[in-house]
Amino acid sequence: AELKGKKVLHTTKVDIFLASFSGGKDSQVVLDLCTRALPPSAFQVIYSDTGYELPSSLTLYEQVKEHYGKLYPDLKFSTARNHEKVLNYWDKIGTPSDKHRWCCSVMKTAPLYRTLKVPGTNRQAKVLAFEGVRAEESAKRSSYERIGRGVKHSFVINARPILTWTTTDIFLYMFIHGLPINQAYRNGKPRVGCILCPFSSPWDDMIANTCYPNELHPFITKI
Image (cartoon, rainbow, N blue to C red; front, side):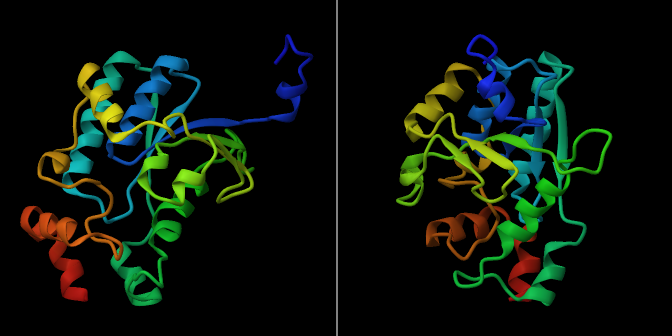
C-alpha cells in the first residue's frame, strides 16, 4: 500500500485482525493459514462458546491452544460467551426453530463483537475477521465473495481464504500438516456445530443422541 501511494493503507483502517475459531475443520485450516501468513503478535484467535458446544469441540480448542502456544507464544487466544446460559434465553425468547433462529446472533455474533474494542479504549474496533466459510457448503454461500464488507456489522470485514476449497482439500491439508481432528468427525458428524439445531439432519441428531446423551439431556428435557 505504501508503494502505491498509501491510498489503500489510508482508506482501509483495521484495528484488530482476528481468526474466528469454531472447533470445526474449516476454522482450523484458516487458523493454520493465518499462523503461516501473519506474525503471531499481529492477530488474535477467538473461540465463541455458544453454550451448545460439543464436548469434542471444547477438547479440541484446548488442544489447539496448546499446539500453537508452543509454536507461537505471542499468539493470543480468548473465549467469547454470552453472560447468560443459553437455556435462560429459551425461557425469555423461546425455543429456537427454523422460523425463529436467534441462536447465532444472540449466543455467538453479539458476544464476539462486544469483546472487540480498540485497546485501551471503549471504542468499537474495526475488524478484519478471517473465517472458514466455503462455497461448497450451501447455495447461499456459493454466492459469497472472498471479501465481505458489513455482512453482519458495519465495522467488520470478513475475509474467506478457503472459499473455493472442497472438503477433500480441507482434510488433505489437515493430514499433511498433522493438525488435530475433532473427534465428532470420526464419530460420523459431517459438521461439528451446535449439539442440536433446527437445521440439523436426522443423521446429525442420531450421532448427538448416541455420543452425547448427557450434554443433550437438558435441552431435550426443556423441549
